[in-house]
Amino acid sequence: MPRTRQLPDRAELRAWRDFIETTEVLRTVLAGRLQSDTGLSPGDYAVLLALSETEHGRMRSSELAAQVGWERSRLSHHLGRMERRQLIRREKAATDSRGAQIVLAPAGRTAFREATAPHLRAVRELFVDALTPAQIEAAAGIAAALREHLVRLGHRE
Amino acid sequence: MPRTRQLPDRAELRAWRDFIETTEVLRTVLAGRLQSDTGLSPGDYAVLLALSETEHGRMRSSELAAQVGWERSRLSHHLGRMERRQLIRREKAATDSRGAQIVLAPAGRTAFREATAPHLRAVRELFVDALTPAQIEAAAGIAAALREHLVRLGHRE
DNA sequence: TCAGTATGATTGACACATCAAACACAGGAG
DNA sequence: CTCCTGTGTTTGATGTGTCAATCATACTGA
Figure 1 (tube, each protein chain N blue to C red):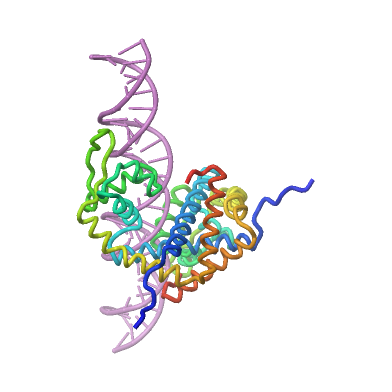
Figure 2 (cartoon, each protein chain N blue to C red):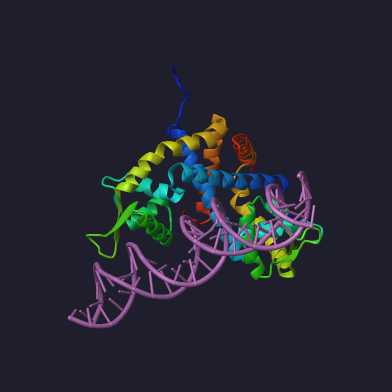
């Protein structure tokens, strides 16, 4: 009896490779711009963004991890590097002294404020300006479909 | 006088974030599968693929770099790790002894052969099966538009 | 009370990526 | 032949990401 097709055909594979390679290049180019414009990595930016959106620029470490969608270990390493550069501080949590409060330091606040506009400008230049409005919508739809499918296959994030 | 809009609007920004974050997750998930199914990283796979497509499984280092689209330094580091695992060998080039010939080693040939099917299956499961045919076409179009735009802005790759 | 376990976070080891500097040979000018 | 410069490749330093193991504190049940 006939089985369902196992492997992508030529056109599907080409679409896959173009898609994944291009998004990779895009990520790299954008990271390079962010770095040279502002001295921040995308990770730095994500962390500072999350902290900036809170009331007092402070957040539990695990909440921050959930917010940016990282594993705790990854966050911990990254925070170590950011702390060395004085972008954030770590304090013991008052309510649960296992936990850590991550606090946005002055240098971090400044760096983020000055990074926002250049970063958004780069997003516009490299992504928004490259696509038609219909393509932007399609991109959002594709992202949604991919993510939903991943979740269905058992990947939480 | 009125200026052209500088920054992405709310919807564009959301599309951007969904798009870039989802492709990132997809990359990570696929890399994890490849790793656990075959013991190869995406980089390993790309290098082995390029070598496998040559006549004799050998190639100049700089040609290989162009083929996989990497900087030479990155390739050199990666080849060092692959050589340790006996996936490839390095030989001096006959014609120009500055250059290196990269040779596909038996273990590399085997590893690649056994990785192909699982890898393509994963691509189908995670990408092709998630999208409608129209979305796959749209994805290819988006990739093409993004890449062309990048080139126009002066990024070779 | 006090084991035992669960939870929040960190650590260490290693693979991967990027940049700048170094190294090694080739090829040409004198 | 010898210096000079260009090209192919490697190296070192540092930042980033993942996994497994660990540490420290909180909680729970006998």
